[in-house]
Image (cartoon, rainbow, N blue to C red; front, side, top):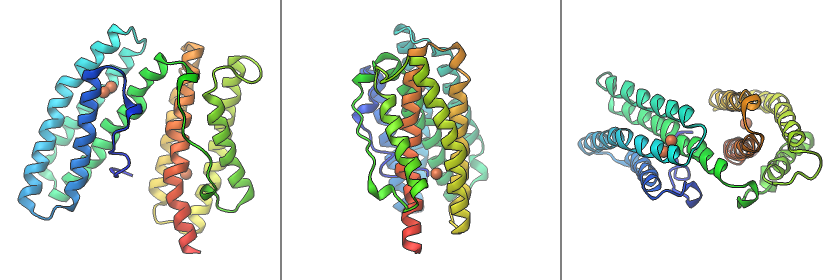
Amino acid sequence: MSLTIDNTTWKDEYCLGNLDVDKEHKKIFSLAQKTLELQEEKDEEVIKNELKRIIDELGFYVATHYLIEQEFLETQQYPYVKEHTQLHKQAVKALNEFIANLGNLSIAEVQEQLCDLIEIHFLNHILYEDSKYTAWENSLDSYQKSFHWDESFEINDEAFDKRNKELFTLAQEAFQEAPCCGSRDEKIRKMVNYVYDYMKIHFREEEALMKEYNYPHLAKHLLRHRNIIKQMNRLVVQLPNSDTAYFEKQLANLLEATFIYHVMDEDQNFRKWIKEAQ
Ligand SMILES: [Fe+2]
Ligand SMILES: [Fe+2]
Ligand SMILES: [Fe+2]
C-alpha cells in the first residue's frame, strides 16, 4: 500500500501519553506526509534536496527517539521492552542498509523505497508495535472503538459477506472486558480459533476470486495475507508465556489494527475494482 493520505495522517488515538514520545511520533507522520507530497514534485533538484533532508531527519530520529522511548517504557515497567528494542534495531538496520545502497538507485527508486521504508518500519511500528504499550496499560473497556460493518463491504456473495460480518462482531466482542460467556481463556480460545478459520477459508476464497477476475494487485494482496498470517502466528506463539489479560488486549488490537483495517481498506480496493469491472 505504501504511503497514502490516510496512513500518513496523525490521529490522537496513537498517543502513548508521554509528551516527548508523542511529539516525535507526530514528527514521523509529518515526515511521511512530506515524502508523499514529494511524489507530485517535478523539479529534480528540489526532489533530491528534499529526499536528503528527509533521510537525514530519519537518521536523527532513530538516533534519539528510540532511546527516549525505551527509557519511557522501562520506567513504566513495560514487560516487553527487550522485544520492542529488538524492533527498533531492525528499523535502524533497514535504514542503514537503505542509505548504504543509495548510490545504486535512481531518484524514482529512492522515492519508492523510502516510502516503503517509512510505512513498514516507522508508521506501522507506531501503529502496531508502540500501540501495544497502550494496550498493555489500558483496560479493554476504556477503548473507544469506531469500526462498524458497512454494507459497502459486501460483494453480494452470502457466505463471503457473512464471514466478514462475523469478523466485525468478533472484533467488537474482543474489546469487551467481561466475556459474555465463559472465562477469559475460553474467550481467547474462541477468538483464536475463529481467526485461524477466517484466514484459512476467507483468504483462500478471496484469493481465488481475485485470480478469477485477474485482479491486477493480486501479488501484493497475497503478500498482505501472508503478512497478516505471520503477525497472527507471532502473537499466538506468545500465548503460553503471556499474561492472559495482556494477550487478550493484544489479540483485540491485532483484530482491529490488522484484520478490520484490511477489510476496510485493502479488501475495499478489490471490491471497488470488482464493481467497476462488472
Ligand atoms: Fe516510537
Ligand atoms: Fe517503538
Ligand atoms: Fe484480503
